[in-house]
Amino acid sequence: MKNKLKLEVEPIPSLVKSLAFPAITGMLVNAIYNVVDTFFVGKLNDSYALGAVSIAFPTIMIITAIALTLGIGLGALLSRKLGEKNNDEANSIFSTVILFSFFIGISIAVFGFFNTEFICKIFGIDGTLKLYFKNFIKWIFIAAPFTTINMCLNNSIRGEGNAKYSMHALNLGAFINVILDPIFIFYLNLGVSGAAIATGISQFISTLFLLKFYLCNNSIIKFKIKKVKFRLKMFEELLIIGFPSFVRQMLVSTAVALVNSAASLFGPEAIAGLGVAMRINSINVFVLFGLGQALQPIVAYNYGAKLFGRVKESINYTLKLANAFSILSSLFFMIFAKYLISIFTKDVNIIHYGSLFLRGSALTFSLNGFQIIITTLFQSLGKGKYAFLTTSSRQGFFFIPFILILPKLIGFYGLPGTQILGDIGGFSLAFYLYRKFKKEIHSKIQLIKK
Image 1: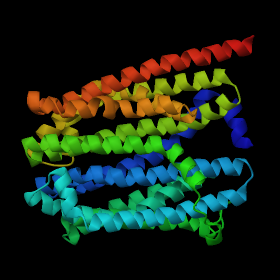
Image 2: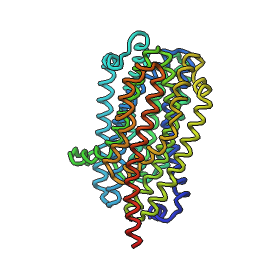
Image 3: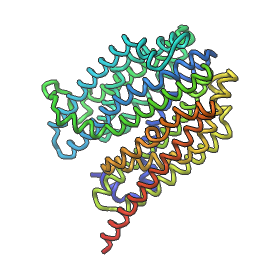
Image 4: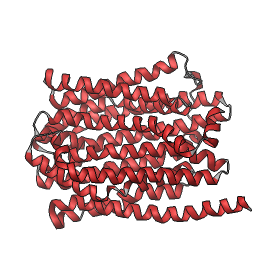
């Protein structure tokens, strides 16, 4: 009741800020998972090692997409059932999805581990790079069951309203990863394999910490094997909620794979440079996703309560924060691109390609804040068609078609050029759909005033 009152009466600026801090912190921890391996592998001064980690990124994104679909769907369903005071159904959903996520994780691990050669053929990896890639990705697959369970437990705890415990679990995993990476990569001399093993162990420890929440009876929800029921309707609801996130992750994964393929025309240094640049860029994207997560409960609650003035105010305020951050990030990247890439490697060719891509992408990064916040808005209000269009537009409608054409026409400059065109196209569609939504909100405000 206290949280509901807070969402309804607390001034929007302080409300957004209070919700944004844990959300952004959690998202930044996800970014650390992406960046920390790249940082330590870069210290090997081996372009093949850094290239292997870059090429593995789309595969990791696919695993994450599957885990996110289950996790986000589970969290939303649990919140709804708990709100309905239907704890028995919540227990059934939780028990079923957790068990299902474990089996999905095992399936991913078995398929991936025994099909690394097939994956190399899909991504066009051969020679020395293939050996490095296999040594890295096989350990990522082994850790897949912990990835899927971790994502589901994290979202279910957040669905109960305990965002802080969820954040602590993410922080713990990131801290363990930072500690173990240099030990496995350098001290034990395991190279890229060590980076993947460290990530797997950190996921395992984070998962144990999440399980502790339920084993120590801190939760309203209980895992009960007798409550496991594989029902088609429940899985349909799960997929409807989680599908937009799955689409976004899969499109990003496809886009990154195509970027790596296009970059391979210019050698392993280009692949490594782009990989570093994209991971640096992911930090800013995760901050924006954190702002979106802060906005989500505010607009959803106030829209349902017909407090459309607060809905409008919260959107405007969050957009101001997102746009200001995006513009400052663009300027920062353009000025310090070479220095940022050099943190990860001393190879002059990797620095050249990475900074070129980062500067090019920064030209239109200022548009990303608007698109991410508007996509989150549409998902929060259940506007599935709009959410799907804004989710799919940047990568699906613009980026992917252009990445197949531009690098062949204008060389390496086609890679940042594709990013620029994708940003402009995605922003334009989001702006058009938001204008339609604003008219709807305005008419509802006028109706209430009458």
